[in-house]
Image (cartoon, rainbow, N blue to C red; front, top):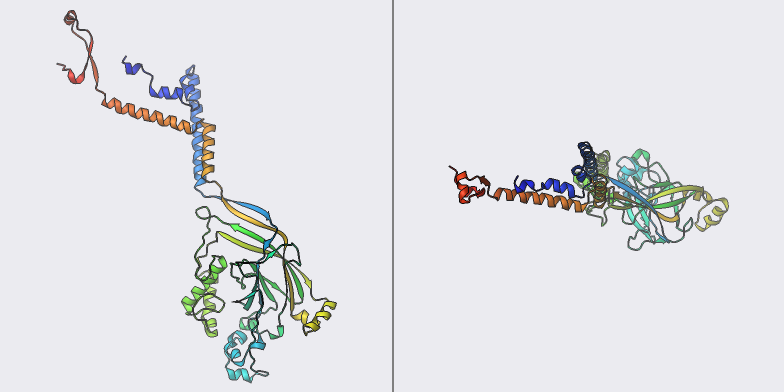
Amino acid sequence: MSPGEEKESPEKEFAGNTTLHGLNRIVIAPSGYFRVLWVVAILGSYSGFAYMFSSMIIDYFSYRTITDTKLEFAEDLTFPAVTICNMNKFDESKLKIIDFSYLSLFLYGVQLDVDAILASPGAYPDETVNSTLEDFNHSFGYYGNCYTFNADANSPLKQTIQGSGNGFVAFVDLKVNDYTESYYASGNSEVGLKLLLHDQNEPPMMDTQGIALAPGSHAFIAAKRTLYENHVPPWGVCQDLQLEYYDTYTLNGCYLECRSKHVVRNCSCRPYDLPGTAPSCDPNTMFSCVRAVLDQVTRGELECNCPVPCSMTAYSMSVSYAGWPNKLTGEYISPLWGSTGEYLELNGVMFSVYYEKLNYQKITELKAMDGGQLASNIGGMMGLFIGASLLTVLEVWEYLWQRVLGLLGKQRRPRVIEVKSPPDDMERGIRNVAFPMENTKIN
């Protein structure tokens, strides 16, 4: 037997010395029975590890998420922006004859000229009265003039004491006798106030959001604040786009811009309640073109690419009502406002907005499995099933490297043959000698 054959094989040496569980038991097994038993056990363990490893890889690349919900308490909370809109676009007492003619499609559903307006009883021109309110920002919306309290995102007001009476309290005179809305002219049929709580960076969408407050009542509106932190793809679907007319990306801002762009593209003008720089649409265009385009947007025929923001603030409301005013209150304040108790019941809306508790909910979307958890799980399964670690990987690499070097050295090593001397040469002292093949010629 050659010296190479007498040396223990690298496979047997690796199996006998590696820290991988079970391999050395095959080498030192006392009998064939136990050797077969260990082979079956090792194959089962390796199969279990392969199954768990593939399951963890598939689970990781499925990009699943979990939701973490926390209730945070604070000494003070940023008060929401409060937008209110009277459910009446045009105040009758402030319209001139030319205004009635220009807006007749909105007011009556038909186009009327100045002569037709003057022919109606009691028609007379009137001057428009402009007024300013402190701490309120004016905007145009679906209901016409809207006003937002606490709209400054750079220095918002805060509520420091929880409960009703410690937030924002207001009284609004609806002036229902000046309503020009008509259901038959595609206007509103309701009387009341539309109210929405929203973040200072988010423009209000009063046509689809908010609550309605009826006259003759005091609405107690308890607000709850919720912060959302969404994950970017591929784990989530959030994306913060760059809007053209708003500094911060929000769903409302994106939808308003989308509506505006579709209308401008199809009607060459912009409705007064949508953002943009295009010229405003006249009433005829509003009825003949704008409404049809907005209906297409609502039905989904014209798409809006508005992904979920990665960070957003939402406000939910819990509303309760009480009649307002009572008898003595009406008798006391009606003379101060030059009205009567009956007028206040028909026209007055009282509301209070407040935080019931100084806490907020934070909902965060997290990875169900991140890179660290994947490595930890794989390491745990390696230790459980095959008793391996990172150092064991180094052992396997060392064995493979030595095996490769051995194969390369075997190819380069010259072949050796044995030549036996004839009997007559033994007298001359020639014994069994090994000669390299390349230096030996055989006849």
